Structures are given as C-alpha cells and as structure tokens.
Amino acid sequence: MDERELTARVKLGDEVAERALYDAHVDRVYWTAYRMSGRHDLAQDFTQDVFIRAFDRIKDYRGDAPFGAWLHTITTSVVLNGLRKVKRFDQREAVLEEAAMVTSPVRESEPDLKERLAQAIEALPEGCRVTFLMHDVEGFTHEEIGTALGTTAGTSKAQLSRARAKLRIALADFVGDWVQ
Amino acid sequence: MTDNRPDDDILDERIRALTTAEYNAPEGSVPRDAMWAQIAAARRAARVAATTDAPVDDATVIPLAPRRRSRTVVFGWSALLAAGLVLGIAIERARHEDSGTTTSRVAVAPRTDSAPVVAPPESTNTDSVRGAHPNRETTPAIAPKSRDILQPRAARELAVVTPRDRARDLPALPDSTVQTFYRTAALQTLAQAEALLIAYRGAENVRDPAAMQQAARWARDVLSSTRLLLDSPAGRDPQMRTLFSDLELILAQIVQISGTPLQARERELIEDAMRDRDLLPRIRSAVPAGLATS
Image (spheres, one colour):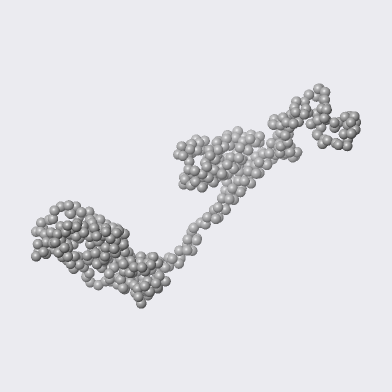
C-alpha cells in the first residue's frame, strides 16, 4: 500500500493505516526530536505529540508534497514549542549568547572535541541551530526548511551560513588538527 | 558570508561530519510500541470526545431564540401596560373635567344670562323663526345642540370635539376605583423602570450598542407611561410624584442614547443622577416584592 493510499485511509479513520504510517516515519521523527532536544524523554514526548497532531490534522494534508516533509513541518513546530515550554532552550541560549561575546577560551580549559562541539551547537541562536541541524545533519533542502520554519529558502541559507561561521569560530582551536 | 576562505569549506565539512556522528547521535532503539500506546490512547480519547461533544454543547448552550422571545414578551407587556394606562388615565381625566375640578381646554364663550339672546340671521331653527319662514322646513339644516345655539358663532367655531370630550359620556368611576387603577399602573410602571435601569446598566457595562439601543426603545415606552402618571390628577401622593419626576429625568437621558456608545461624560451624568437620587433603592422600596418578577 503506498503512502497516498495510507493517508487516504487515515482520513477515513482507519487505525491500521495510522499504525502503518507511524511505523514508516517514527524513526526519523524521533531522532530529529532527539537531535534537537538532546534528551530521550523529550524526544519521546515530542514524537507522540507530532503523530497525534498529524492524525488530527490529516484532513489538511493535500498530498501535493511527500507525507514525510509535511510531517517534518509538524515535528519542527512541536519540538521548538516544546523546548520553549521546558525553558531549557531559552536558558541555554541566554547563557551561551553571552559566552559567544567572549573570545574563544583557551584550549587547556576545554574537555574533548565532542563536548566542545555540543556546546558550540547549543550556543547557536535558535534559528541558526535548527537550520544547521536540519540541513547539514538531517539533509533537508533550504526550501523544505523554509516551509517547516515558516520562512523562506533565502532565510534558511543565511541562517546556515551564520551557524557555520559561529561554529568555525567556536571550534577554532581544533582547526590546525582538522586541516592537517 | 560570501567571502569564504578555502579552508572554511573543509572546516564546514568536518564540523558537519562530526556533528552527524557525535551530536545527539541516534543511540539505542526507538521505543515504538510505548509511544504508539500513548498515541492510540490519545486518538481514542479524541474520538470519544468528538462523539460526545455535540450533545453536551446542545445542553449547555442557551439558544438565542428563546431569549429573544422572552424579551419580546417583556416589550409586549410594556405596550399592553401603556395602552391600559392611557385608557385609565383618559377615563379618569374625563371624570375630573366633568366634575369641574380641572379647567377645560376647550374655548367657551362667556355666557350672560341677563343679556338678550340674539339669534344670528342664519340661525333659523327656532320655532318662531321656522314659522316665519315656512320654506326652510323643506330643507332643514342640521340641528345644533341647544347650548350651541346660545353661544356666539365665533365661540362655537373654536370648540373642538376631542376623544376626551367623548369620554365625558362614560360613566364616572368611584374615587376609590380610580385610585386603585392609578396605583396599579404606577406600580407596574415602576417595576418596568426597575427592570429597565438594571438592563441599561448591564448594556452600558458591556458597551453593547444593540443592547443600548434596545434599552433606549424600552426607556421611551416607560417614559411615556411615567409622563402620563405625572399628568394624572389621580396622582396625589407627593412622594410618588417626586419619584416619577426623578425617573422621568433619568429616562429622558437614556432615551437620548441612539445606539452609539455614550461619551464618558454622558455615562457619568446618568450614573450620577441615578446615584444622587437613590433612584433604584427608592423604586425598589415603592414596588412590593414579587411584583417585578410577576
């Protein structure tokens, strides 16, 4: 059964079709949520919310775009709103925005590269961070990101460029090793 | 942003690869069944809510039509009351005019019994004149009442027959009956006024132009009744007359509302007048408990 037929049956209230659609997309939704939140409990909550909302609004899905893209729009919205609700996002952003104003810390005070990378990514402004993760990690196009975030492809490109620049600065201490 | 150095592309690719591999990388398995159980439960709850929502809404939402009907009934009663009031006061006034307690508004020429009555040349309806001119018998003029014959023509031309004059022919009511009518009409008008003032305050609070306009129309009806009661000779109670005078003032102000939101100053004037004159408490003390609701 193809996806178009599945969505059509979901619109009619078919629970079996709902489960089939869920199985087909749950991994990507879950890991996207996990990438953006960094916590399995939040990723689980967000994934449930995404599918509940998607099935509630399935009548709005016209079928002119892949179901996965439509679902990712909902995923992004649910995750971003969820992160704002738990305030973890805002607190982290505020602290790290201040940190970004300071020059790069000395290498001796830092743990390993993996942790520095995580800190640098989390220090990015919300739009930049989401765009960077969606484009460079999840593989979405700028058009898809623009649709998901309610912006344009041009904005997505600008956000990505800004994110990359900030990450280069934040990880400048490792540049010598990488380039070599 | 456009002046990327050659090393930047290498760095970007390294960062991307590192992020994909390290940053919140998928680890472990996705708890599919646990999440599906929650999703399925939420979906079932939503379906149940959707099927039970409609009857609950029907039971809790008050339909508009009955409320409109009830308001129509109020206005209908107001109109009936006003009509009854007009009739009662007209009868009562006619009785007073007949008994000479009020001055007639109809112009009547002074009559001097000592002066000789000179019949005008065209007045040919007396027997003596009729005898002198027998030809007039074949074309008789409409016979005026005898008292008209005794009045000068100018005075008769001024006399106008009004409904009040016709009411004179009605039998006079006993004073106690008139007082009972008056008191009933007064109490009903006050009960209406109380309800109106409360409704006006409600409409004013929510700044609802439609409700204000309706209150203004209602106030016009009650104002008519109030003025009739003020004019009625049966209203002898000075306390009641003062109350009706104050009520007339407030109602006249409310009638000025034309459906547009009142200026703050106008609202203050009406509110101040109601408060300074203790209008609502005085109306409530004048109206027996239960009359307004009945």
